[in-house]
Length: 437
Image 1 (cartoon, helix red, strand yellow):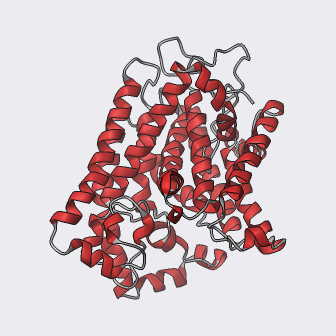
Image 2 (cartoon, rainbow, N blue to C red):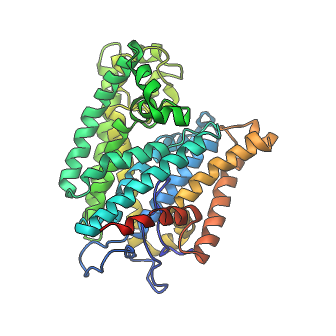
Image 3 (tube, rainbow, N blue to C red):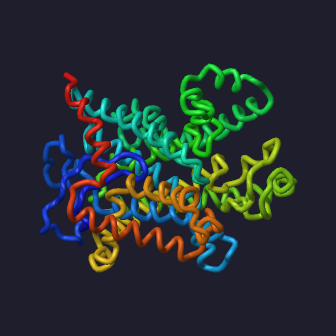
């Protein structure tokens, strides 16, 4: 596969792109047109996607692999640091890129209207349902992976009404969500812990009965990726997609904003935990992990065991669902996207080396699903001792094996076919949307 191949959204939904001409230069931000999109003149943002987005998706896939099958970050050193950095942040990058692709499907640079707009909305709704079903099917395999796809399905439906908004408005909504939603989630989770209303909702929730989970309560509030605090990532990705990423200075500003959010999120948490009296000791007493001194950036602090104290709102651990964590994770995702876009346009030699990673990014849904199925086969069906004993804290050879296998499969497949296998099925599932008038 070359960097000009069609794109798929990380663990969620592929954008509808066609293969670019083979003569396209790898040194330019090559993009291709959406299936239903008209051509646009030079100087306007492409209605397709940039090569750097595929590269970012590929890196997000590998980050997810590192979190699920890599060695324990406790190994320390540079390897341990990279592994810990991947945890939680690759999921945020996935979510941000999902918002990017939602805008591609509904119209970039300008939202589709009329019949085309209704068809695009219907495609998103169908995709959301398919992803939710696929997510619950993977969850039923009972691996140790917290599957994100079902949460994505509801996330798409939650942010869909925003698809016509401009970049600035979307950015303001994302910022407001980052500031408000974590506090709201904290209050709701506290209410769930102290009351029985959630049990009553679950008992009457058809989704809960159908899937054997906590249904919408889990998707919205209690799950690993609660919609309330993951919406800002998706909306931020929508804002990025509204920008003309080919204009000079846009990527630099994107990187600066990302860096500022990293400092504000992780740096703000570090400062707050040390300035607020007894914050560190309170977090340490409430959690089941390591030292609370790492809570400003690392999940090694663990999770609250019984009651979640208000001091928890000061941490920025990637899965803590706090304002500091949302800001920091968004900053990392924006910086990663800006970096990948810069590599794709300004560094042709490095881009050539990164082509296999971008190939994985073009069929990221398939790569994500296959690694969960592979884990299930290796640990529950075939019970391979070398894998089963290490579980999700596998050795470096296990991680490299997953990455190498995914890369080879992606490169071979994308040289032969326009879309990945699951991307193709998802695309076909949305065909009924074309019948809308």
